[in-house]
Image 1 (cartoon, rainbow, N blue to C red):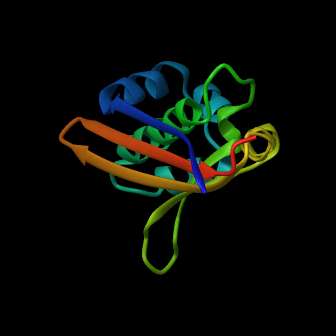
Image 2: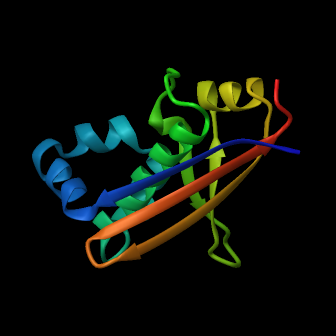
Length: 128
């Protein structure tokens, strides 16, 4: 397997809170899947979870090479039900582009500190 790309994104959590406060459901529905919205809004600090999802979407976008048209809703941050480890699930055009570029495996790392969350995405596969 070859390295297809690496992406990283750092998000200031209060920025996500400000966007939600300003645009509400319109912002949420544009960026996040229904599953991500439901998961985040059930948590004590929903903005932290939304910011982690946002950072993961941006990091994937950068790792796949950017400059491609797909909806961020097609990149879904999920958690393993047993280990709680985060992973990305792709749908629609995002999945199509991932496969077209030879992507086979996505590695995801998340971390946070105070008001920031960071996501790193590594994509491996066979270069096309």
